[in-house]
Image (cartoon, rainbow, N blue to C red; front, top):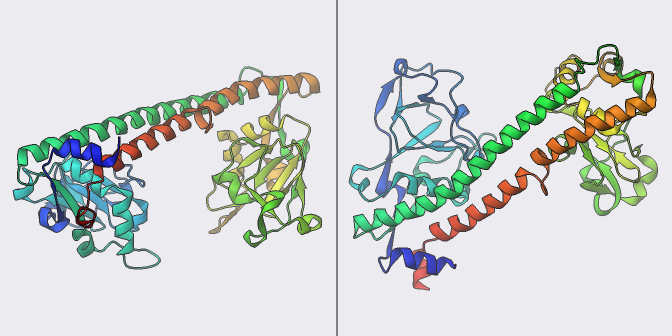
Length: 422
């Protein structure tokens, strides 16, 4: 269905009037005492979730006595770094910090504007792009309160409040349906990831194999080979396949047989390579969780690695090692060998000597490999369901999101005055 036909059907000849936000709403002018707030009623910019994720309970309470109050139906916007897209439609009363804007529909428009209808416009990518366009400051951009109030909102059938609300309610109902479907799938994904993490921890703890497993230092299992430097200026569309350390914790999963980047062919002699079966570990990261993240390289040919990463060469199942490097035990050991500066860096000598992973049946290599393969097969099923773009829940969520965006654009794409004139 086209945008025009869908909106025409909803409007049924009723027309649209565009109004600035200032004409239909205002910033909250009421105040509340900080002493009346708790973790569920105080909203600071830190407990608004990025990418329109709503809010979570506050981890701290305000240190000012009086704050702006919000009411159910108010739209709360994070006003620092608008590109983070922090927005929430309040379902309770409370108070918010100065970095959060509480937008309230004016009394005389409460009978013609549905709060959820307004929320969908103020949570749109178009609104956030507008907000960033008018934001001030480079390092920590802040939205312009005046510009926000100049943002235009369509009011369907403005001369007929009852019909206007009916149209808005129908639009909200359809969009809510898609939102709820996505939320259900997201909750299912979270459950599957918890199951995956649980079984990974159980399988790799070997609590029921006492005497048949040995926790060996990584340096006793294999060797670490540091990569050689290349930069983004060296990237080309076709050339030598490379793994950059930053891609390991942002783009790769447990294993890979294809790369996201390639560099110039003439660099071949100056690079260092991971061989098929090596596990490539990020040597540098912004957080302790990122540094030390690993991906098993299962490609058929060698792959060049950055000098802030290491290829771990061994005789075990590479996916088994990669899974073991995700466990709580591994991360707990690894944390002790990460530098404490602004940029986190693994201290490789400590990693070699002190960090251990379990080796089942250490005195029987063939039996050990068979047990590793059995564990990998189980974890692969959970990994595919939880993380695979093509086969798992993320793919389903992606498709639902595209459906939502399609209908959102249809339902919220009211013709603007210049489009009508044309």
